[in-house]
Image (cartoon, rainbow, N blue to C red; front, side, top):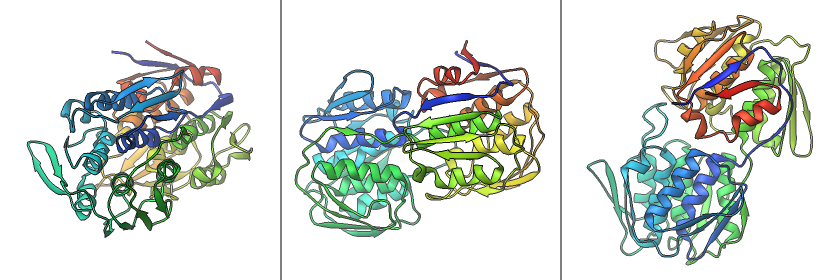
Length: 420
């Protein structure tokens, strides 16, 4: 099994380009099921999660072809199956979102309950509630969701219990081909939802309000695809910025929007970093600066992303002072704490695992550690880059789910990192 070996203690300096957004492209690929004709998506990152979705779409009968290094052509015009099996869905939670498009276009679907990172239960009740409101008859049996709508889906008014990103995207996709008007309230507002809406609207969908808590969809009978470039990955971009911050370096990430990371760059600034903004770039510098730990808690967009909580915890572990980090999205997203402690971090968890108290220690020491999920893996990479000595990270297949050409990009910034 591959491991990542990092020789730490080197300041990161230079520029990297953000790849296409994993959390957006996966949903665009699922939405390809809504089309009769070939969908062409560019700026697609070569990630394990993308390959998993390619395998799932191929299993359903789609023709999926890579065109060059970052463009996918997907023809789901004549699927041969509407069953998404456990062996594929269990490895990536987002693949569950093929249920709505299959139901909208074919009137029935059978999809395994999802898997993915072990960061909490993450139930799909909001997904199923939304599809049920559109007229789907849903049963759960033997680990599969079986849904039927033989007369098609019908627009409805519904409010989510909380702003779930996956449920918002899922019901949005299903409602595009539903009869009549769908009004969704208490929606998530993440930029990836806006990207999905832009993709569908470019093809003839009638979606208003994406990026706000209230979305309205007027159903259409057909979508006509146009080539579409997926947005850049704000989580990957911020991970490299935090790596620059933790190592006392200066890093510029290109092809990224400040608006997508406002809460993140604001926190880095008050920590003591110098921030500069280009037309489509962000530069963070900690050269010659003493960082001061800052308390924060995760929240739905535009709040601080849960997907960056672990990475920022490393920064706080190296900074001066004490801080508290609250996790409000997932109930089991502090599994990296034990591994950071092996490297010398001083972190204490509340009894209910909803809050971590961090005391800055000034430096970390390299150690053998184990990744538990995608973002915890990135956290350990940043810790290894900043630590003295050698860090070996096991179970790095998690990293391959969400970070394209990680070693190459880090090496270009001056890191000593290799896969062994």
